[in-house]
Length: 410
View 1: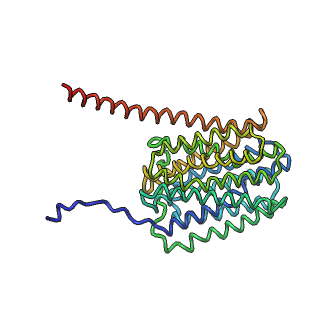
View 2: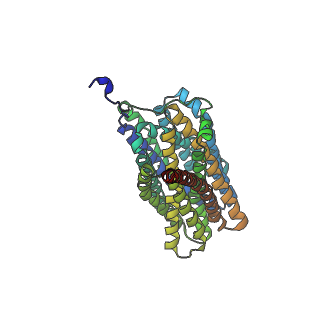
View 3: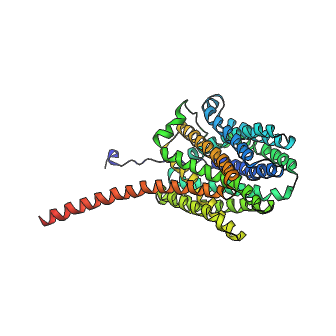
């Protein structure tokens, strides 16, 4: 047999395990800082008598930073190499956290929250692109699940550390600043052992995802709205219902631990089943859990429902990240990650601002109800599309079967 008759198969490049290790470790470390600082922002402002509307607006300043980072990422990747930019953004997060430790002025907190959102989003955009560049297609769902698990563990560890600092919020923010500064050196240490890096994003390409894969953008928006509500607004909800600050912080731990436990399973399901089926199931579970929380009185039951919220919400992001890697490559991954970040910014702004405002207008119970309604609406809309998809398959199958039967009989 000649060599021309031998079938050729496409061999995917081996995953860059060092890059995967770096991305997961750095995002885990940043998640620890976020898990501690996000609830702490709300708790400290609540303690100082700041209204829920202003607390929500402070979260909106963070979301504004996310949006501005999305609009400037293309120019930044052209000016600074991806791994360098990753390290600089981590250091910027540390500097922002240091501001919270040195000032109590509310207007300063708004500016610092904006800067923190900007730097955090740069890290998140590059993380999503780098992660999908470093792994192969047949393991993308499981890698995304492992990534989600690492972030969740970081958020849980961070929230557990809140009671250790007690009333000393300045010490907490200062410790976080030093911690994130040390982590920002890791990309520089491992630089020579990495074979792949985030690509350069073309100007204007960040909006391609909204045209080519709008479902990913909507999925991230819903995740951001409900996740920020859970992490930022729900601690205030618990405090308003006369639970102490320790319970509010512990609820975030339960939320994030459920995220960590569930995401490897979600990743496996994404590699072996339908993305939409996973998204529908996750949205339905999280939505119903949000809606049932106001009707529960026993703290263990509340925490169980809150755990389901965490598992379902993060599953939507894991699904979106896997879909991004399957549909985009190269520099388009950075652009797609930027579009995801923009969707996240809009969703998180809505999650913090809208739920904070409805709590002031209708009472604390309005926050989980609003988040639950958003999730149920998304699930119904996606479910209708999913049902229509199977209906088309069923119709084609029936038509084909009918033709074969008629052909056999006549």
